[in-house]
Image (cartoon, rainbow, N blue to C red; front, side):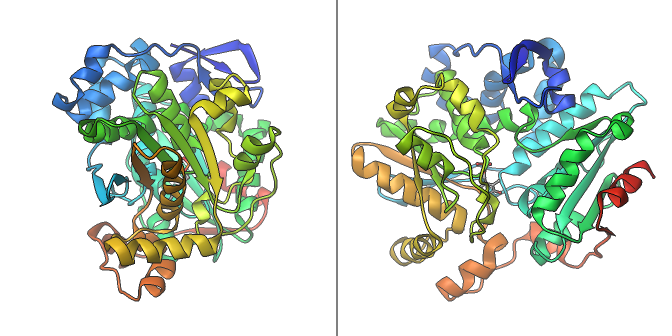
Length: 429
Ligand SMILES: *Cc1c(COP(=O)(O)O)cnc(C)c1O
């Protein structure tokens, strides 16, 4: 399988090259050259397959022969080390819980898959890859955990001082081994700027830098696995399926659209956002006009210019009327989000966190337009990760899950930096 750069379709690379580089040299995102639908018999028989078998069928054309079958199956088995239940919230409405993994966020899936692909590509080499991650909280922990102990890969996480929760900071700073954390005296944007600058810095070429956010195909493509698992669980209802993704960088929803191009019967997509409404405005007005990000209580979605949207535009041929066939996008305020968390709990006893609650709101809105459907929203993180919002709203104390408990007592190890020069010196030390 070849991947082209969305800035220049004649620039093509292999799966391995795309994974190792992250972005194309012209800063374009990589995109698969072909998407071949899976056989009808696969979907007819999907309830009899294991999740590992489903994931293998979904991803194999994208990896091609660059990772041998047995190795790819091992990577998938190690990636899918936890459950993806579709939980009934109310009639015809399901929550696809993506938070049962090691760091309790869906990013565990892509983090685990990508790290193992890199490890495979580095198996006989002396050279190392350095993965840089700027995080506002959630991504860093999943990447750190996914890459822990992976041979020939060093991970450097930059996070803004005082702006991540205590639990999140512990997930980043307590692992040790090949994971290094940098506490940046600044904001998330300062972390992100340092990472971007490093990628363009000739003085760091020898570090083989790559990124582990959803611009990287090995982080992004495995996110379709659980969209297939949702279908496997919902197929028996025999109704059109609406999928609602609480969206920030639009990696999940883009993976869902790829799954549909592979033949997965998803009738309609909803990209639900917080106040960062670049995509809802685009669908309404037809022009894409990104704005600086706005801080909200669903902070993992505080993205003003979603990086994967360019891939979605490619999938819809940059054509607004093609979007309107099966794609909607709605935006919600913090107050609407808080009211939804309370309302869902009072009516159903289901505990949603802010991101999932936005997914729920988008889903319900679309279901009023398409009443004979069954709907699923992604619950992208465990409520414990947003306990400062959830506990006071619901007037309860959430039990601490074992994954979180295990980091609470550990010592935080990190290096404090302020400037790019300090960052570069750290990388070269
Ligand atoms: C990263 C993240 C999102 C946004 O996902 P995208 O695929 O980038 O749209 C939503 N919720 C949580 C909890 C996240 O960590």
